[in-house]
Length: 223
Image 1 (cartoon, rainbow, N blue to C red):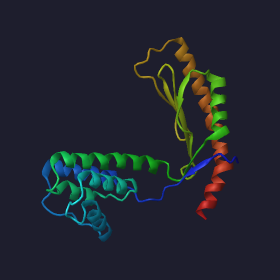
Image 2 (cartoon, helix red, strand yellow):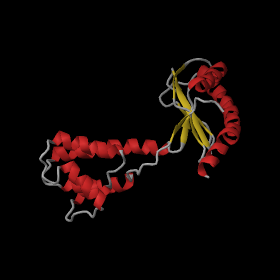
Image 3 (spheres, rainbow, N blue to C red):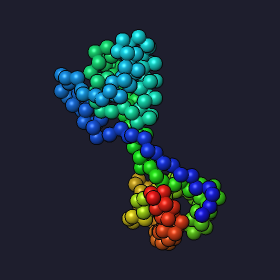
Image 4 (cartoon, one colour):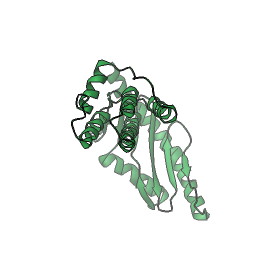
């Protein structure tokens, strides 16, 4: 196996997106009449964010601390609800707090999808690009990352052609094509036919690579 594969492992606690969304909707629709229960760690983080509850620091400093904890995956639904119920913040400030939490929550979700994954790079990803372009042509505007998920027995890769057609290969389902709002002529039909054929070969090739080169590696990590 080559040396240019870059592992991305993230074992940090993650924000529960569903809990956050539920709490936010409840706050907006009904408001909260009781203080949410928090652990000692959550209360300590809140004291740091709020300046020991005195709000002695500027609001920009509060936002920076919130962002720092959110990036570490340490902001919980109870903490966010407490912030949104704090009467010291204006409606505009609460909106900023919510925006930061939601942005970082989305980022954490993306990291969770890549937990324990491997992103192909260097000469190996260049070789993948060259093989595809040799088969379907070089009218590809951009590529997505080729991500290998050994634990989930899957590999994903895709990109976008100059004409706006997006594609994605994966081992767990059919090739995905997005050709919305695109006039499809004979050239596009031929292109999609080539993509389908290439995708079938790609799945066979990567299923074997995953089994031979990556599955053993992930099994060893688990032991």
